[in-house]
Amino acid sequence: MTQQTPLTKQGAERLREELARLKKVERPKIIEAIAEARAHGDLKENAEYHAAREQQGFIEGRIQELESSLSHARVIDVAELNVEGKVVFGAHVTLLEDVDDAEEITWQIVGDLESSIEHRRLAVSAPLARALIGREEGETVEVKTPNGLRVYEIVEVRYERGR
Image (tube, rainbow, N blue to C red):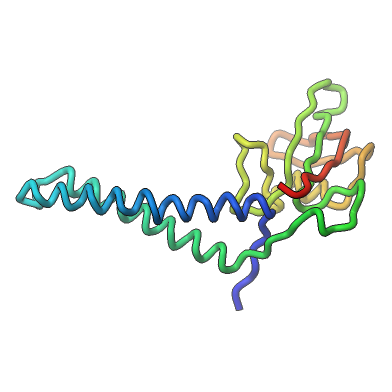
C-alpha cells in the first residue's frame, strides 16, 4: 500500500499548474526541437538532437513524478481544521529566532513535495517543523541543529484561508 503524501491546497494547485505547463507547453516545444534537430541529418554527431532528447527525458520524468505525487496526495485545507492558535500543517508561523536576536522569520509548514527555502515553505518532516507542530503563540521551542541548540519564540500563528 502506498502512503499518502500531505499537501496544502495551494501546494497541490501549484503542482497541478506545473504539470499542465509541462504537458501543454514544454512537451510540445521539446517534440518540435527534436523534429527540427532530426531534419539536420546525421543524428550521431548532432548535439542539438542529443540535448533535446536529454531535455525530453527530464520533462517526462518530472511529469511522471508529478502525476504519481498528485495521485497519492492527501490535500489538507487549513480552513477545514478547527485549531485556532495552534501550529498545524499549513499554518504560517512567525518566529523570533534565538529569542535574544530581534530578527523575525515567517515559515509555512507544508508537505515535503512543496517545501522551498526560497519561498519560506518548511517541510513538515524538517526538525523545526516537527518541534513547532502542536505548539501555540508565545511558546518557546528548542531545536537541535548541526550548529547546536537553537531557541525560537512563536510570535504569531495564522492560517491562509480560501486562496
